[in-house]
Length: 421
Image (cartoon, rainbow, N blue to C red):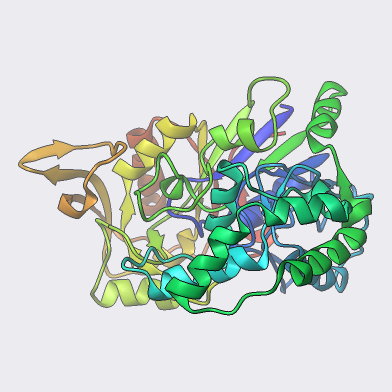
């Protein structure tokens, strides 16, 4: 197989980073295609923790080229901060990291606007306040700044001035926030552009040439399908295409298809921020999942809401992104629980619904559960009968295999049941 995608199949935080890191060992390119530094991908190698936000999770492999595609929104200061942190672990140069010249830049105005809306607006979405949404808004309204614009001061002044008057009125009269002047922001971004120059390239052609020469390309998604701007639980979503379609729009798929699409899901369900959550637990089991699973956001530091595995949502994710297999993470967190359940369907308005769909009112969904005998595996030996029954039920209900399961954060705590490369 030559092209593989790793996509979050829930509301993000599923453990995509460590799986990307694992598969990157056999990949030539790892491509990030959407989102920004609102993502948090945590990798553990020999007990050492690395948290990545916008730089692809293949960066720890020296043979692998990491690529930030044009569908990503990039905040330059964060990019260089992240680069500095990674350079303390492994050497990163323009030879193993490339940034699309067409990626959209997050400015100070985007960040300030995002934070103001979340703190002063009428409805909390649960954003990270990092400027992601406003940057995508400017991109869609054709006012966005591209990475290539940072390399030319005159272009930067012209592009940054577009729409500034509108933002200035919002900041002054609605949010009462002081903002940098155009000159200050231009100079700040231009200096970052000078530093970034050697990393910048035409990543679309780079991916195309690599694929045509037979190289193995691994696409890394951020967040999850249920946060997709079109497929997610709107309006409590992110601002990019987190589903498989985002690969076509945010990076390019020269060969026209993916050989394997891995949907990453926890063995239970979590969610950060606001929005509906049918299987959310408010009892001792929910508290145990949160504590035992260390369910705290790598980017935000917020506690994650926890609940049982939700198959109607996973069936929906499979259809949204043509998933070919599931990678089930954190199965060790379920081991030893006093009870174990899986939601196989919802009851909505007196009808049984076994697959979610765009616009479904999850606030009205009553989860229907199947109970399982708890397993006591420590994953140092062959899987128990109870654990196998749990996996087999999931596979039978989803119609695709569980190709991977992870029972800890480290590289050596991942069981491969399928050979993807």
